[in-house]
Amino acid sequence: MFVAFKTTTVDQMSYVRDASLKYEREMQSGFSYTLSVKSRNDEPTGNLHYIMNDETHTVIPDITTTEASLLFRYAPGETFVNTKQRRIPVTYDAPVFTLSHTTGLKDVLGSDYQFNLTEAGISKRFWLSSWGKFDLAIKAGKQWNKVPFPLLIMPAANLSYITQRETFNLINNMEFLNDQFVSLDLAYDMNGKLFNRIPLIKKLKWREVFRFRSLYGTLSDKNNPDKTPGLFLFPTRDGVTTSFAMEKETPYMEVSVGVYNIFKLLHVEYVRRLNYLDHPGINRDGIRVALIMNF
Image (cartoon, rainbow, N blue to C red; front, side, top):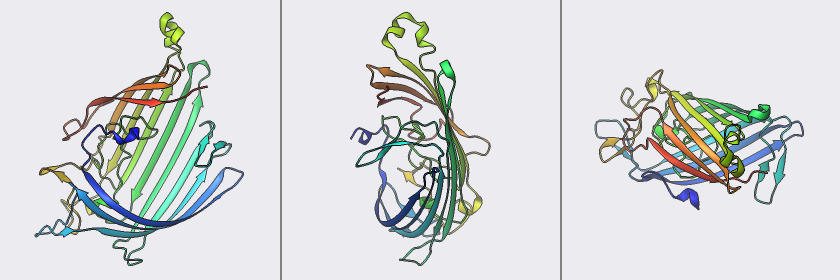
């Protein structure tokens, strides 16, 4: 419910109809693999349009894809608390390695495109004794084929006021379109190392946390509608382009400073965007919150 409140305009949307079948096998060693197939129809709505970069700017009403995926995951020593609806990690101490590959199957169940997408990731928590803990998450991926922008790699944008793990708080939806990327998420929880030196704050038992998030991505000429025919034009709003290819050697960066354990429950965080400040409709900074119980 709270995630429904957005920090920016959200009018570039799609109606999505999909059917999927998934098989997952998990082993005691922490290794698991997932096989899945999915058929998906994507119909743009609102201020989102699929327009070919041809002379007549042909409007495409929808696209259909059929894909098969294989995901490997290895998290030695990972443990969970299970509920009827989901399971929650007990800690994030275990290193988590993931590797996935998705293949688009053209002409299968009406699919319009053939493509190959590979992604990999690693995350780990490091304990620093009395200095708190440090969380690291690195992800990378590549789209190998020529595809229209809905099939490119889009950042994990968080458009709500609720902070979420491994998402970018100040990137707009579809703001950056890449066919290869590397992302970095760092979080340092000092566990009161600073606040415990301040008498009044020490009694409140507030805790401080610092975050840094960065995204480096590139868009090859074969997937750039300004350089290659047969693609969709990038999305616009009121005639102004709202999606971009990232500048070479200039990663996107944002930082945040947060305080948690307020009333034993509330987490408040100030987020600041460091670059790409000239993009239309962006927020340079903001406040994010969360309800987090710590024991």
